[in-house]
Length: 449
Image (tube, rainbow, N blue to C red; front, side):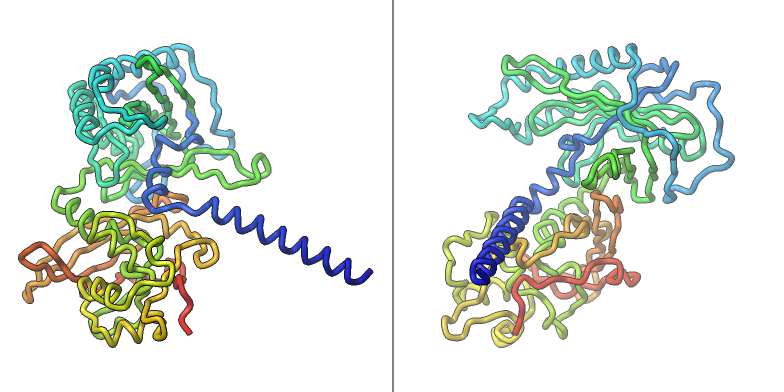
């Protein structure tokens, strides 16, 4: 009897572990997928509202009369809080506003219709339009004078001044509105009309897609109050939508959104894409720890290898080709190309199988990584400084749009050495303003003995 009980308990324990493992694996995502998921195109919780009696011209920032004004201006970096009493989501939409929104979406879709019809859409069910075609679509909508954005990291908003003026006026307590269009990777568009009534901010969101016969179809329209918002010094419009909360729902619904308003410079964009985006803050600690040429023992060499591989060869690390680990010479050669470290130091600092002469590698997953909001951040270069010793120091912000909604969770200085052929080495990283205390402790992928 006791043996049967023990056997039953063991089966139950195995079943629970299997379920947890499946859940973890289901939640595992690549960094690129997480970025795509965080765009407003995929935010199904983005619900929005309507402003009674507003009849302003499209794309224009107006100040309707009759709204109460704020007692004083709010600083640009401060959060502005809205009405805490009303639910704030699934708000009713005035018939005129709905009709106007749908008309505008279809009109904008008409402007890019020929580009979409002639674009190579491939055979996949999820259409992805080529970047050059998306750029042409942006130019078409830009000509209307409305602010236009795309969902790519480091992309700039066209005609951004209109949204910037609206946000600055709202901070000063003036009521008004502004419309932003967003072109999605599948060739559809989003329309976001922001209202400020002198006290609360609302957004009327709509999305339009293409039918199988290339006709524009409105797929989504809603109206939501913005719970809190701010316009940062760097030029990000950060806000949190009102969303269902416990006990109405049992899971966390992320209502946070970030919109780049002020443009990033071309030089900063190029350096961001070339030097830091491929590393980011998940699976390795090169950008989120402090180190230099004399203190490299705490870097996660086994974790960073796949990211350096992708940077060098512009393709994902083929882990299936290395079931027994990464050969010694291959591992050390790549690490030394990007870091000022010796063979002896790599063997000492990394997890090395001396018998097999290979370096251990494991895929990042739920058994060796606990997901954090900080890990979803992307690095953005904000300044480039050339030093007297011919090294270059990049000032980098970790930008997180999930939950934290922070355009600089940490700021760090990454020092590099560039060669004439364009190759480079990382020489050191310094986290400013005690930012290391604001982020989770790094979790090594493979536990060192």
